[in-house]
Length: 281
Image (cartoon, rainbow, N blue to C red; front, top):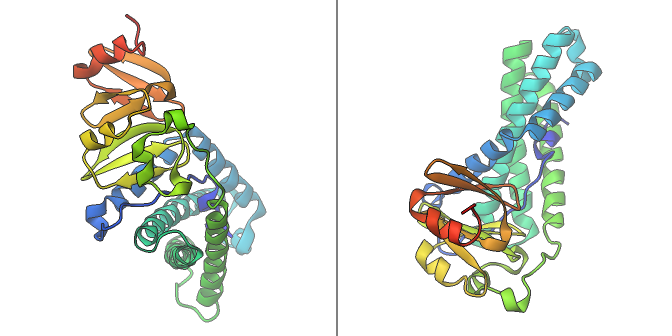
């Protein structure tokens, strides 16, 4: 039951460039960690985690009231929720992207990701219960019961997420269509928001998803023709229509995009950004 909370907030998944084969070189782990860090820096995430932890402390599932008093019980469930949320999300997103990269879209990679995620989260829970409650990880009936429940829940959640991701994504009007979008799977296309450098890849962010494409930023920018945008940093390009707000800080600035992300503007590009009307004169 606890493992199901790791997907309380869900973000769209993407597809990696064909031909990339190494986990570390692909930047998948780095991308997953960045996504988790972004979520954990969001007050909404911590509000949900705190509310769920308090409810679990009150409900005391799995006979935890027999081991712990109320506030220690809340702390226990808070630790469980945070760790399983982070570990489960990391495992699921990295495996989903690896399997999509090699096999394309399909239900099978969601099944594999769900099973693997459930197994990893089960180990986390067994260790937490051993440290906090003194329940030895290998006891007759207990281990199989916990692993079966966590894996089953993770599998169901992963498949449901996979089915939800098959919904058609909005696409740019023909007049605003960028050639770069043709590199993306159909369900990853949408209004072009930004381009960012990530290792040897360009992270293409659209209104539908974030996708890594193996190419140089300059080449990616050349394929944005049809969308009004500009480079604002040596590692970032933005679509002008997707800039929601701007903030000047000394000789630098920050642009807030419509999807909530902040894109830094370096000193070199301040004038171009100001001339585009994105900063005060």
